[in-house]
Image (cartoon, one colour):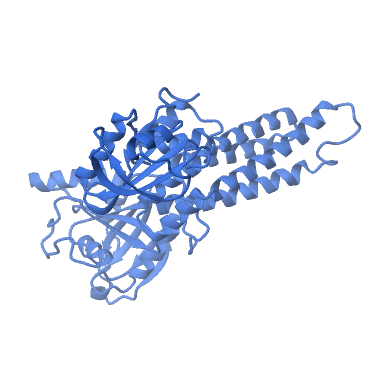
Length: 449
């Protein structure tokens, strides 16, 4: 069901705030030709740019620019769409928008143009989200992945899975409808290989989506450890500039210092924290409390230790307090002072990296290890920019397929698990999506998009 006001004529400034050579006001609604006539005195041909004066109510020109008219259903929203390309000053843009409101339009809500495109079957939900992700992309890799979603590559992969699920369900239902036939449903049909192939295809899609999720959101990396082990020096080395103050005095860092870097197009949000120790200094104590909060929100923790001393009892005490379930890498820093070569080894299941933040030796090993933790496969050219809800749906579908495989001796139960898997996947493209979820998704879009 469409929300209230879904048939109103809506208008918004579609270009960013500020001054520019060109600004665009976008209008969408039903039967906009009378609207265009009142605004410009012209009846433009669809999909042909024309020069026009944009007229006030008394006929005085507000601006002169280009007008583009797209007739329904051959437009982004599926409705009549009008674009006014005027001079890009804020006074001009707001005057044109005010004139559109005078002519009966209302101000568009965030994402309302994209929501109308979705509700008029011009795009599906994954493609709509691809629009917002393309606008917000922080790296070139993320932009390419968002474009793949926008052009329907993600949706096509999901539809291929749901179609295969539907075929498998129909095969199972057929065997259930004819229980008296002298056949063994598992031995005499290809239910088992079909289900196995479905699980392989879903695993492939999940891997592509996980890569895209990392491209979209990045990964939060917290530097933690005792005072004066080189956390701030490592932050500066990763950032490529002096972002944190470095001294020989323990406890110099009193608050979290944040920096975002890119490694192979992946945003890594690096957070340097105060050294973890017992202290009576009130300010330092507050910094340490904030450090533990940052550590609890990390995707990966780099526990920095001094390579000259190795992992000390104090370092082990810190490690014991680190949250379970968050990946931890031990970085043995100051390899140059310890006269040790950079390298990687594992100890009791934990990866240890030896490096020098001062010289840069071994930092490439750290980059590679962070990419491994992120699940990055080294190119990202087939990554699909995925949101948390997409990953949750894929995980749910995978669990349902696993349950179906475990219950093939009871085909009724297996068929139900396959139905639930299909429903989970269909939620990605919006075939089964609650209205309140749609409101949350589109409410985070830009106004005018």
